[in-house]
Amino acid sequence: MPRIHLYSDITPRAGEFALAEAPSHHLLRVLRARRGQELTLFTGDGHEYRATLTGVAGKAALLAVEEGILRDTASPLAVTLAVPVLRGERWDWLLQKATELGVARIQPLHSRYCQVPLVETQGEKRRKRWQEILIAAAEQSQATRLPALAPALSLADYLQQSHAPTCLVLDSTAQEGLNSMSGPHATEVELLTGPEGGLAPEELQAARDRGFLLRRCGPRILRAETAPIAALAILQARWGDLG
Image 1: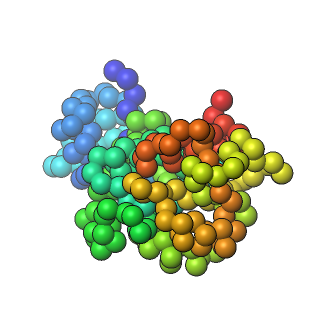
Image 2 (image 1 turned 60 degrees about the horizontal axis):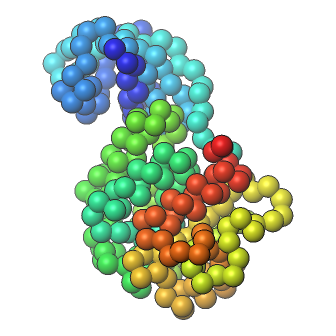
């Protein structure tokens, strides 16, 4: 049986450990694990814990857990991805792929051409669903770090915050591409991208006024869900841990 990689929001203790109800349900009912199944629990902070399923008590899976070890999958490049919320499955896909590519923080936004009203992005039910997607992506990719999920903001409010030393905004009409970046090795980057229809001219200017550099991914216009993932891959290959 392949070893299962499973998230736990409670730090396991060595010895017998009762897994919380939600991950127990996923382990027992969705993955249909049986006694003797080997798994690795991770807590989202870089630590993981080898364990074996030994039984069931009510709705809780009982595990025999070993001492935790540090296996930090965090990229040396901490990227904050600031992106307007997209409709439906395209947003879910973006969250999933950004997690697989090692994004450190995701900042959902609402901009002028965003098709999802800001109030819809700020509900607790929506936020819980997004967190579940991040967890599932980390489980699938064997990551031990979870991206931080910031509360949704308007683009104007986001731009008023303090930002990383290197801030980039994607613009298909920009003269320079991401590969033209020069200077010292970056360890922290903020990447701002647009929704369907892109960022409005006044939004791009506001970003430039806050120190964001306009960059493009290439000669073709990428979809709103493709552009941030392509840019993230380029940045991780340049300064992070891809390749």
